[in-house]
Length: 560
Image 1 (tube, rainbow, N blue to C red):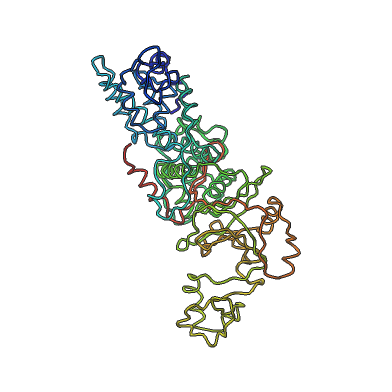
Image 2: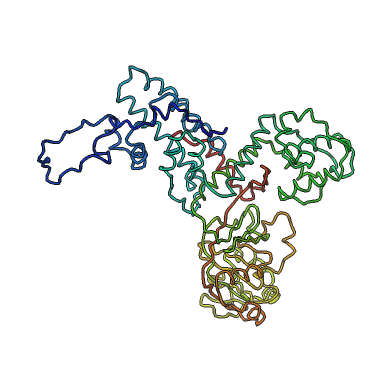
């Protein structure tokens, strides 16, 4: 629901006029200043205005609430039924942002307004209602900007601080006074294409859900392939058309959706799996991180059969994540989407460079964090991390000590001194570590991008570059392997103003740490959905199973 210009003229005539009698004299910008010695001016005793019920309550109110009223010139805001109707409409419009209007109890406000605004209501009751309504509005706008939930209540390991809210109360007050409710919401809504794309996708998928959702493709013994003629093909056409994936519907899918059951698709026949349909299937597979073969096998069918209501909840969860991360972001930054398994580098000149990445396996998840890339390691050695040492390498060394030679590994003590592997008790190695020499078989490749963090993770090269061709790449032990990392490193060196002869030093083969002249802001995020142009959406596997807890918390969120 859109709420543009929903505030009626009556609100501007009554609810937003400057009723200074309802504000204590001390709050007025034109009230005379009190004398430090308490003596009245010589022209007579000062008149002491009795505090109004609204003024008395504002003395104990939050600074934000008091500021909101000060911007109204001290006037009550919600003393007109039309104004209350507008407030309720604004709260209900939060559904478009994935928030639950019921969390803000608009029905309760409507009931209380009937009592508080009745002719016989006391001034105290009116003041109490006015403050409650304003507090509800400001709470809603704050949660629209920064999130309904505290991420630490959902994810105990969350370590990215949520930025303090920055509500433009001046702009919001002016928007309300001008009767532009949508402008008031827009001033609080998170900026940026991530949030806008998710919000637009939510609108599309809610529209689909209102129409009853999409058809379910039945299970089959054999995959449905291009060239097949089958009654399931007609269901597939309808399914892809509903989300705007099929070209025949791409011009304006929302125009056709209300009458979708009556659409007569033109030749070729609905039951024929033609090239146009195969192209639409491949686009769907790409958006869902599936093998782009155009074949409806078990994984593609499962993705097609996820109900619209589930996709809506996924979009709502990602909108909440976007609100948590909606503080100021530097224009120059490097972002890794762990669920989407992709890196985007936003350069200072406005260009964007992207690459596929390999992230941690589900049981060795890459962390969500913010940091800065501060230095590079060229021709790195690799010290085996404790988890990999314990679970992967030690069992192999115990079976065959020759494993160390085969993998260019050396045993070292905590000070980095080499040890004789024959002299180590590999059943109980204690503080002994293993280090793999630099070279073509080193799992870090030729480059490591390092950043401070408590998880011992970094971005790096890899000799196993063929793995980047897989559609799903949660394959590492927590660190992030970057496709074309050498090209990325060249860009970072140039954009940070660093003087590093990268190619020459890599060719030299020596292991070396090199600092960047300027740290590069880095964020590792987790998006299981992404909005695209025209309301289309990409959905990614929830490889770390982080969505259920967030969906449950949004559903169980206590009322304000």
